[in-house]
Image (cartoon, rainbow, N blue to C red; front, top):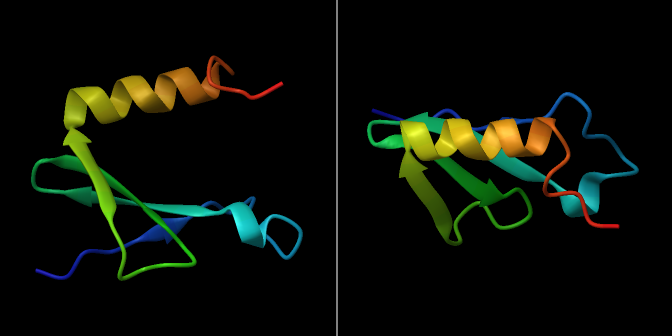
Length: 64
């Protein structure tokens, strides 16, 4: 089965240099660098992926 990677709809020409792509995989979720699609991937369980997304949504991982 081919993995379907998705980039944020908020990604555009301005943010293109700092983009990641996400995909659902059998084990849960995966993240990769959009500039290096053949490079490494970070995979995690569904629970871990959900927790990561929640932390992103509430701004807990924002760099200031």
